[in-house]
Length: 344
Ligand SMILES: [Zn+2]
Ligand SMILES: [Zn+2]
Image 1 (tube, rainbow, N blue to C red):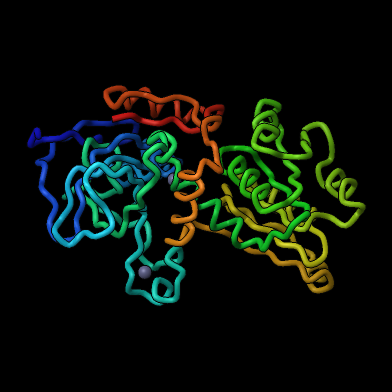
Image 2: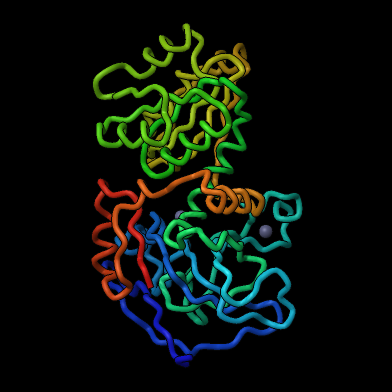
């Protein structure tokens, strides 16, 4: 085994560099993973594009690979296992971690996987990780797909927050990768899914992911249309997966009595929306959010992928070799693309 390996580090705005690291063998509960795939998420795009200036940054948190060596106390994994990693880790010590809400951890998002460099560190040939952050996936699961366990887990968390029941009317606003996963998960929960999007190509993806009703919100009034197809009641559940504050307001207007509105996306700009509180009072609607995933959501996501209950192939726009990671980032910031995956 070569004793050095490469890590891609974002060193400044639009600047990526390869850094060499010493390969170390795993101790105790550690596992050495040979990285196969790492997808480019919005977090990495924001650091690369200069929206979040935290340099140097070893990005890459949507990762999959193979176990190459294990420490002497590791029980759940063996050499050769296919794995994905939960890298936006939680401390395990705070109030929220201890009460089963790791996604609300007070120090969440802090990681230093590659020694001495801030960041989750998935754009690398190897990662040395704690066994508890790794999730084994099926031997016959394509590792390219396994790298999408993280975004899928976030959507699992969101769908679990919505209490979907059989035959519920579920609206998904926005059909990016997150919207597309929401559509498929809501279908698995037994809902009738209504997808709202302004882009025809994305509505086509919505249909392929299982959406029953497609609404092009550029052409029709989406709120009216949702009311129309639900006999005037409004939806049981609305997921807002687009970052536009006006759509948050639309989501609230689409919901029916006792319904759940989930603000899945963060909003840019974070502009306040008007809310008629009497409508909250009288309809008993629930307005909530969803952020990141708990360990249980992560486990569910890896099972859904391993069991082939979710096929993410439509949501991968291009697979790019590690050497061409700059090109991969250029592709990823194009709003037309779904996930771009870097292959080590
Ligand atoms: Zn992500
Ligand atoms: Zn914590």
